[in-house]
Length: 286
Image (cartoon, rainbow, N blue to C red; front, side):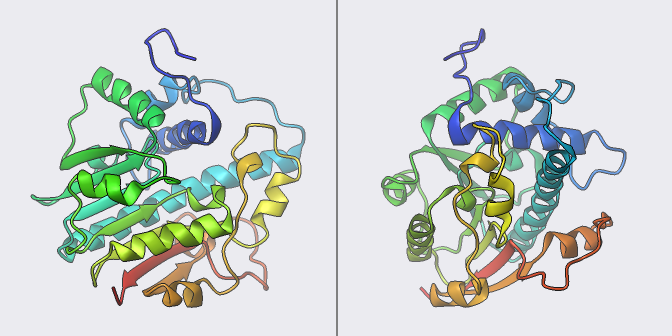
């Protein structure tokens, strides 16, 4: 379906990117935002869920808390990955690849050194929807922005190469809010492909579903909601798993990063809290 402006209406997994834009728009409107995303309100509004639009009612208090928890995680992970990208370009990396880019506007809102090339990999529909909003907003990227319309289940490495990505040069890869929607074998295959395209010194930022989160959130998730489409969570030993793929990784919990950012989680921590779902990694081998 298309909206009155001729845009394809969001549907399926990529529609969740519009929900992420709404959360980022609401964070941007705060007096003390952890980041500013001036394009987020336009993406959310074009998708029919602008910051002022009411959300569907929830069944109970537990569902309300889960919704707030998802929004909170989006804010913290956005800040975490912004910082990771800042460190990567400060270290001299000039290739950025956003896997499942959705409504990500980092090409427009972050300060990039001269010579930075940012590749947005996603299917044609979200990239087309996004392009129409960017035209409407007359947005100008702050780096060389290259869109790569391809399904991650297909030959995206070939499409990325055709778009100009150079695997001989270090790359910083971002997979934000993506891997939880993929089966475990697809996650493994995706990261094997990423590794094959990563020169030594490349970096990677991932968000993984903490263990148990899929079971808790899918139990009564509304059909079509983000949680209803979650299928995989992080391995028991994410650091060891990534080491086997050639990456030296660190993991952080949302609680740890939120406290560091001055947004402490109000609920007490669980003593059995496992590895965190925010991952920063450096390529140690090719």
